[in-house]
Image 1 (tube, rainbow, N blue to C red):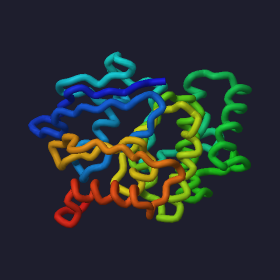
Image 2 (image 1 turned 120 degrees about the vertical axis):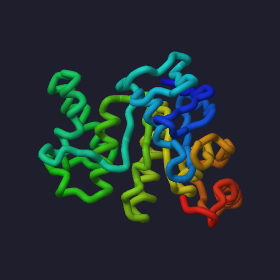
Image 3 (image 1 turned 90 degrees about the vertical axis):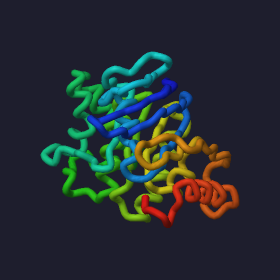
Image 4 (image 1 turned 30 degrees about the horizontal axis):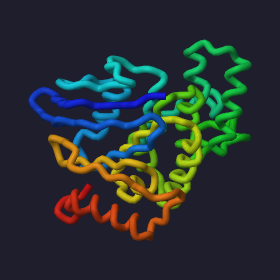
Length: 248
């Protein structure tokens, strides 16, 4: 498994400074989250860790080695599921294994196993348009899990879901992560989601984004959203983000 680290990272797009002096370290098997206002560079951090972007200055490291390109051990899941509408659930989930030329027998066995994990057993032959939004996002997660990644990078994966489905999917994600040994990094605008899911929460400033606080969600799971510590952490984050002055 992988320890992820950003050291003195700055990122510019032309004349626009997006990230400023980012330092963070996510230990192997940890569940971390980043919250902050729109445009502060949260997604850019994920893209650098995935290998899709490079820092302008500074280092992005996996187990102490610079990340210079994408790697199947680190997979990125977006808010939009990006499923192929002409492929069935089974074919969507198995697409990466097809590209990797994994034998069909092994592919089918791994697909069955991961669909059972995400609660989609029996939906192998359905097409994306036949599924609810929550089910399509499960397929997207299954497509990542079937590749046995060491790191899952989640870019607002539940942002397009209704509130009830979102709560259900949060619990499902915790169930999948627990005992897996995987490292998880979640980007979210939802403060409650960050406090409910993560061990460590990085709070970012408006652009140019820098880390203004690192909070430890030192609570047992499952977490009581109305418990004293939960409410305290939520308020700390809201105070940092100055909720009411601008919207996140």
